[in-house]
Image 1 (cartoon, rainbow, N blue to C red):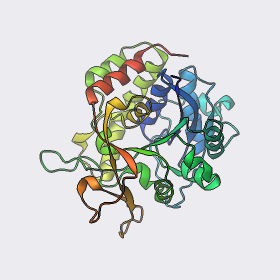
Image 2: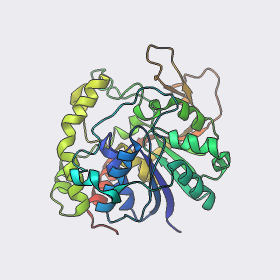
Image 3: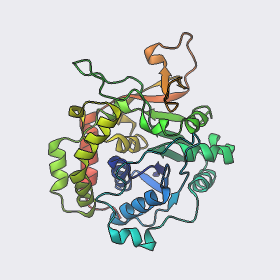
Length: 329
């Protein structure tokens, strides 16, 4: 059985785990990374970050393509801590870290048509590039093997004190709700990996120590990122109203990559998941309704696979081992 062909579509830089996901992907012999495509906001900067990460991993052969920067929603963009402890001043001037001339949307269409029913698209941010590809070439809907989306909230996590640990609205899909609706309504074979599942896979202190004490290029880069992330994580949690004691080094995006080649990491089910736009002062709000909560009066047909649980110990160990191994390249 050959390697699983994947395209990683990412808003790399805003949150640390996109970088971890790209590194985990190239360190996984089960997959063939056809391209990394960037979305949301400064897609050129995000492409530069991705190029630097691939250089550290010894995989500069993988094309990096800039994609759709402005969401179809046309709402204000949100930014994080793009490139901290990844890009140096020299990297910002390095012309070899520029993106490919091929646009992300064209790369997605090209690869899907070249390898019909073989390519898995993995979105780690807003789904703007996939939506734009569907609009430009609707034929890809029936030729994509699978679209794996990190996004949404199926069952919000509530702690023993009754405090919600996960957001009611989730970042990725909310960053372009129009694109999300196009993708959800397309009929594409979708697997959703929601944040209530990915919040079950934090790195442990022992795993962080193992990464920090491993002397390989990839482990050193991950260690550098981990060194600056905790205070930034707290700022993000404060901005969305989640108690800061619930911060952690979550592996949202790496888990989504793993689903492409090893479904045994997750427990999944078939659900009907729909997008519902609430009438609030913040028009970005997006709610996901689903059969698991019985919020739909009349049962609707299943339209996607949804991860509902994860073998967190096995996955975080698997991730740590892949990051700490020597570069595959």
